[in-house]
Image 1 (cartoon, rainbow, N blue to C red):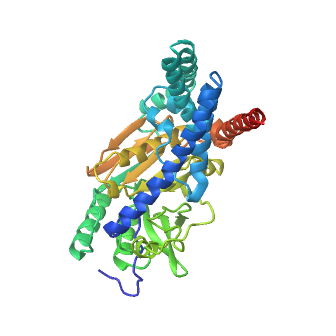
Image 2: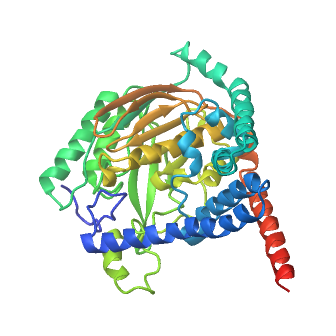
Image 3: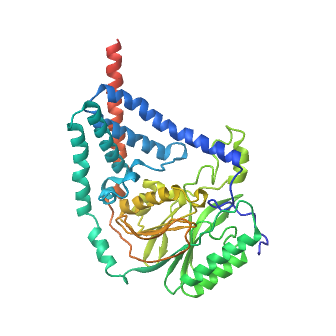
Length: 443
């Protein structure tokens, strides 16, 4: 390994191994307690509306839930994991409808249906359930009818249309301890798959951390292998740390056969993975920080140009933020690419939960989405959110896709804040009236 003059590489994604077990458990417990607060607030406020307003609760409780999901997206760095909408990822019409109302709007419908059924059970009347079921039963078929489904089917009937993309899934597990032999073996696997996938004009996409611990333009072996690939005519999209001051960006590089290099720097870092919040508050956070690393977030959005397309990048965690992906589309992204290292989670539901969020981002913006994951799930997702091809967890392989970018903006892409803002206004107004009337009664 040529490491001459290179600084110690930062831990990208999960590739550098896990922090100590005790620190991880404390960090996980802190995160779980923080997220539980949102459910506690919903239960506390929701119980007041449930008891006071029998009819209005069918609208106010879903609005309250969405308002809290929106708050969770931004408060404390943001953690919008597993929105209620994602439970409907395979419900016909839900993904196409998200192009109009986004995942937050689908969350509203999920809660509307649930609250209506609960009200029917409590009151033993059929009217609440009828209302709660009728609304989605009207909206979902309409969304499916007026979605891009026919365009997607037409594209599937023309397999040679579009630009060639190759998504690599090398199935490389995390290294709990650094092992030179394992590092070289894993790296050679990535290069071998790349050579197999590389063809003139194709885009070869590596998952996050695939080249770890080697750094672009600081490791001669990585630079030479990338040159070999581009000499064969393919463009390579890969992940590497990029030094900035005394820290690093988590970056995606696009290296083309012409020699041009474009770089995207990750904007939204993973708490307790790429940076550690509250380090000055809890002393044991310093120990976790030394294991997790301190990376720097980018302060601007960059699109990566490729063969007439503009790639909107989302590195790992960024894809769970609806408004951030919408911002890429507003700036002109014609297709979406997300690279991730979900090896932390093993063969659990978490990689699939992450993938469900990515499918919603494709459907919300009506853009094809390409996902390369180091251990899965890698996938080629159509603009309607349907999965064209995927590699599940712990599989190794190459997804061969042909994609054609889209340029029209969806209603959600234009105003991703509209539905959660309206829900927040509705919930805020309802509780304003509730507390005002409660004080007047008590006086």
